[in-house]
View (cartoon, helix red, strand yellow):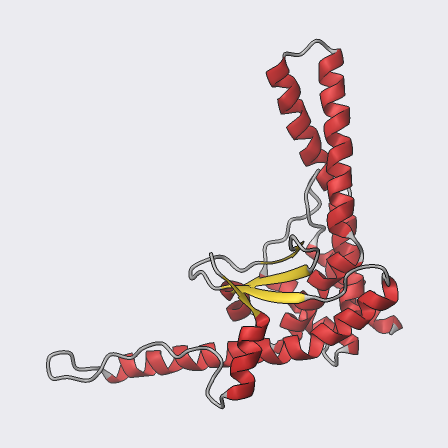
Length: 245
């Protein structure tokens, strides 16, 4: 897997008038391998989609990132608010975006090609970006790790007190960490949706239109120990937050 820093995309966008995404190679026309009209049309459509997705991504990043950093400094002034946005360029991966922290403490917002291509408009991409930035601003990663540590201690301690073997204690520790990490994950998602709505709106995008992204992904419902809340609850908090801005 290669991480392509956003600055790579910005540099291309700033220095070249050509599309940011490299166009797919088109086989040369020869008598041995003639191209059909439908084949040319498919290649052209694919290139147009890639061009549109790349331009949307660069535009949204350039607009949303500074707003997210301002919100970060406002909400958590002691936190590192210098976001680095990266792209996982592996083809064929399901749409995904997440927030993490580099070894030097810099917050990373990661998007793969599947997600960049799957959004229907810039509002959806802006909302996803605002949501992921909010996870960092709200300190969710650290809080989740803390919850996992507490769960591991409790479960392994109970197993040890019951006379379990060393192997079973380790299993209980792993299970406890998983349970602990998921304990407040639904709340974290809703918190990120709320702040993500504010970031999206202040960046000039429509968070309600952006939240329609949820209508095209599987609804997790309200499962026990599920990591995400029902899609309807997420859309509702976006609407309520947007109405208050």
